[in-house]
Image (tube, rainbow, N blue to C red; front, top):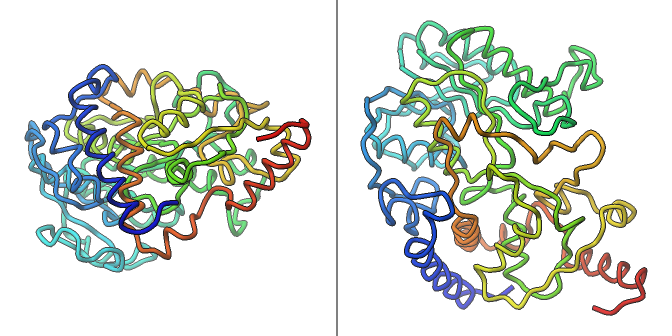
Length: 400
């Protein structure tokens, strides 16, 4: 990793060059055109969650939107885009995460564990529920708001599906039940996928014909503190020999937080209801295209050593955690990154180029405090990566 000011300056110059190149030479060819020109989507300020964007065309109608959460990761992207489109925004949260954001927006304080009093006696056209991770939270908010909100939008997860054996996967595929998750009702510490599926059912119960459920894959880009995608731009930026997982053709589908957030606002404007997946690109991207595409936005002297999935498993290198984004299409997971998203694309889901996501992710990473940058929350530690690469070379009797 290059250090301090030099690393930031180099990253900034590459970012500026890349963004100019994307706009002049190829964004439209890659299937994405910024709505409001270069500054609105590619400007450095808009890469920061809650940063100033602007330039988006006004919405066809003005909505009153309540966002449960709204101040971390996808929330600020939603808020800024909605404000740019001319909507009236109300945020409901505890006021503990980024309370300085959006001073111009109405903020209601409360707690989803039971203190929803500030929501009483109010009405909105749309509620966006970003923050519910337990069905109890949805029960409280949806029961209170069922006569006060037109459409209830809930951000669920691809993990809600009971399995990924279908190719292609669609929104019609069954979601988790207690039986498929292998747990009893009332059990503590329910699996994440089951919790999301139960949250969905609570939304449907209180808003039977007025719900919109989004099932995103791994959400990536500026604002992400999980580092589950960030690992790759940062690791490639560091250069050298890089452990690349599995088969280069293994598919992956992800979504930039801004693509998800902006699409949700447009879906609200158009009044769409139903269940939708949120991931891309439409044609799944192989892992080698992901890694080489990220490398293309850096000046790092980096090269990849592809290590098979069975060897990684034998050395306790886990997919999706030690090797973020990657999930080999083994038995029962053939469709994990092979979703048919033609219905979603038909309703306006768009994807910015991988190059833009990679550059903005690096920019956001370098803007974070040093202690956060020093220890990524996902991916292999450098020493561990070197050990596995050494073991792979020894097993093959080869040199680097």
